[in-house]
Image 1 (cartoon, rainbow, N blue to C red):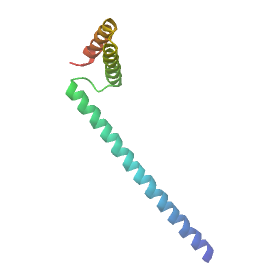
Image 2 (image 1 turned 90 degrees about the vertical axis):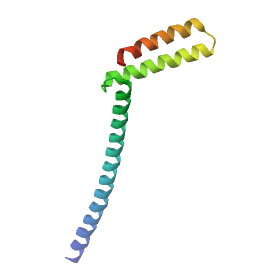
Image 3 (image 1 turned 60 degrees about the vertical axis):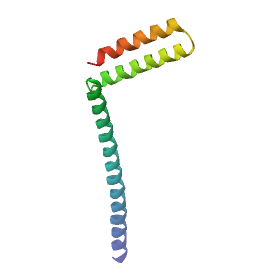
Image 4 (image 1 turned 120 degrees about the horizontal axis):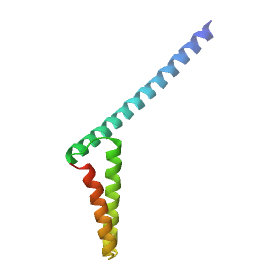
Length: 97
């Protein structure tokens, strides 16, 4: 009878430790999710665009095209730089109001 009480206590102690870890990680992940959501909302509001996944992906593609234009200009490739710049600005103009 005394052994059963020990194992019950051990199970409760282990369950409490696991519960504490899970609650801590849940709080941490909720904090990170809220921070990411607030970042996306602030970015979208500043740029005047929607917060949809398609708009965010179009923004990333547009920024990559502008980055390619800068790299082309750094290589002294004027024609390629102009083409990348026009494509990047064209994509960015779709999402920014």
